[in-house]
Image 1 (tube, rainbow, N blue to C red):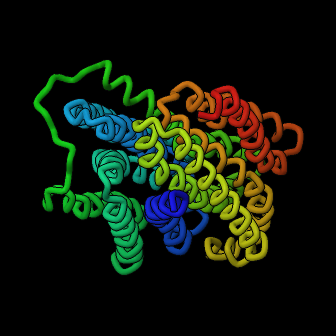
Image 2: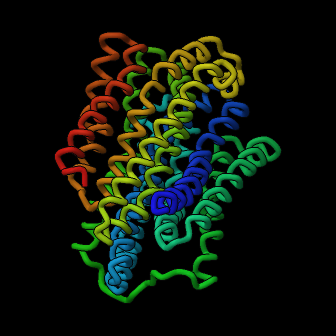
Length: 435
């Protein structure tokens, strides 16, 4: 009976969160599909160069949401509601600081940022436009990502899922409307993406309107200690998202030299499909976090281990199904994003998809174990896992493998990195005593 109850609760949180995260990841996938149809390979290249910045914005919101909501959940289940409200209030303060920084960059430095990311004269205007608008909408992205985590930890995972799906569906509809009937080009694509979190926040507001929320703003001064604690616990979530952006920046730079704009466009197809897959693992991880933090707050380590086991088994099962699907359907899947029927793009992307996606079970494990460490307030091992896959190993691995094996090396650097980090994650788990 105990195991059935635990499994039922796991499924309730995780399934809802996976659905929501897939919806959230479709922000960019919808852009990729409609931009490929409306603007061709150049539009895809511009989009792929700009997406890493979206990953940083999205990651910042998740960092504050995961860090703040984890501490909030632990305090609430320990009966310390006053401390929980202080965490929520300080999260709001830090959210405002990050929003101002991103908006300032968007207003004054979007052109320089586009050049820094590798945009040539042919795609400079499209890249700059996408960057400026996405950064101007950063307050909505950060608020949405953060509040989704708080609402989920406040016992309302269904509303979190509904909000994420509402934002995603509106993005898909608006992408089509703005790009085709309204002929707004890349600006239409990014405007649709920017409006999506605004709509999601509108749905989330139901949590406050119905007075179900247990977290409240308090008139207190910002606490650097609390803010630092929130950021420290949330950094793995930021790095998980930022890692995708950093990998894309590095791979874009390498592939531009090896294959030019067509190579970057092909990589854009692979990378954006990868973002959707990663969102599934993020959904598993974020779905388990409220339960893990609650049992950790209770001191129930047996249930913590049980939930972690469920998460890893589900991740491995999904990984097998995803890889099998993409291996069998690689040609039509890539063809969806190759509206110009470019043979070179098709060939590069098909090869890349098969090699790159061998990383997914390792990436899934790394995301789950990192969130597990965060939920247990073990910030250091969580940061080691996240930093290794986002910075320390992947960057030198990409340059080394591309030098030795050119494009094949580029594709294989990702699975090699994730497998090495997974081994490190297992060692860290064993050294922590498995609790």
